[in-house]
Image (cartoon, rainbow, N blue to C red; front, top):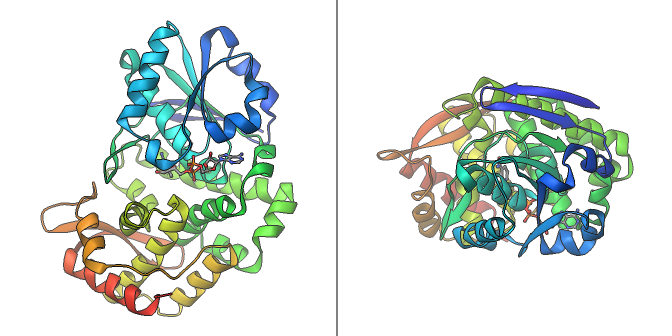
Length: 346
Ligand SMILES: NC(=O)c1ccc[n+]([C@@H]2O[C@H](COP(=O)([O-])OP(=O)(O)OC[C@H]3O[C@@H](n4cnc5c(N)ncnc54)[C@H](O)[C@@H]3O)[C@@H](O)[C@H]2O)c1
């Protein structure tokens, strides 16, 4: 299935339910350079051996300026020029690095993605945001630049570890919470295995997430308003990710529980929603219990990009499928974290 989305910052061609072999037509070997990580290269490097390839160490800790510098030097050595296209083949770490590198090399060259993790397929590859970490500051450098095409081949997911499937589902559950109560019900009535073994069911789910993210990004590409809703669970989630060395999706899962606790206190959202969310998270292999040091988490939250004078923009739920952005005080965040620390201790 092929369709195009025209963002203010550029068009993205989507190739859903496609095959990897299309890459040769979409990205001619002579003008394209692949960026991938060590894991994806070990598993799939033979598929793109005709291309020039830049391989980065796998893992979030390599989403750094040092990696960008190393890659930029290699691009220069390859004599990459304004008409060169970078193609990021990998998970969200690879798509973020590739998008950022393409946006700064020679003041901007084209880039495209072949997402290979569920998380990248439903979220990271879509919408043009990229980012790299500066020490403990998550995604502190970055910009918004749309990829030329995104090519989906679900067969990559066959080698994905179980915990990476769960990480991807954390972002799917996020979409359901902020804007698709029907999806929350569908997830509740289904299982991870059911999506894994039924490609048409998984395709439908990915398509639904792609559409929801594109609708939001089309309305607010530069994240001045509604796009902030996609950060549901991410404010404390990023703090958990950095402090407790968690995978992005798992960290967001904990962050969504904290955000729901804050929603109960600030907006009076029904307390029945929290056990429902926790049971869906667990159903998709995500943990709900974590030992935290509330003050350390608060210090990390204060380093978040969404911080303002005395408050931070927090995404709260009004009800299942309906979210708002609300400036909350650090005391309110602290209270929610304290409840999480007490009630969700392992
Ligand atoms: N730009 C955005 O809008 C956006 C949105 C959400 C997340 N993100 C970013 O995405 C990253 C998280 O994404 P992720 O979970 O995909 O991380 P990741 O890229 O680190 O991938 C997770 C692991 O899975 C491996 N992997 C990837 N594809 C595989 C495959 N087909 N088979 C086997 N192993 C495979 C990777 O090598 C890695 O070890 C974070 O850096 C996060 O900040 C960005």
